[in-house]
Length: 263
Image (cartoon, rainbow, N blue to C red):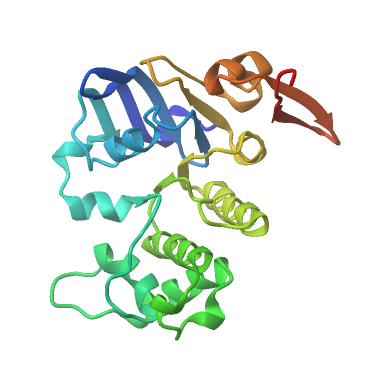
């Protein structure tokens, strides 16, 4: 585990709530350089709202979030966008554009006023498209893409942004199994190369495969944060998902499955 001087994001006493309900209460968490954190929980437990709060896109109900030591609310949005990228669950394309131009949007935080994209910016965009297997579609109209292709393009866009911190809300949304694994491997490599990644996921086994630590959100204020192999067990997952879970050893890993009760 990296040392304290490699902290990219620090969360202290964070409170996330909706009217009449506290979802996350008093969250203390750090994201270290080189680390992948998976966020797990049922629908409606605050995963998306927590990520939006960490990104500074939603007012926090209590606590503090620091990006590279600075309170995120004290930074201008361009400063934040140079260092932190947020991938939402879904993205909409209103206007026609090429795949390359859409990926290139990720460079905008790094481009000053009244400047055009440089050849280096285009290189960043093309390299990101190559990471998600879309380099051959660079000249396609984005409106002609399938849902899965559009998701991969959104991932390429945040890769083009080249941040220190990636906040990913269900990055495997709309993707087939091959591209789910490929996508998480892309961000695992980004972490291995020094970035920090926080991703909300629904698949416990994918989380176990790529995450160094896991954040479990129970939706009633309770949370648990720790090393992946310590917090992922049958008892915790049954409480987390409110369904019986069974662990099975397969090859060198432990897999978790939801099991139904008697008919």
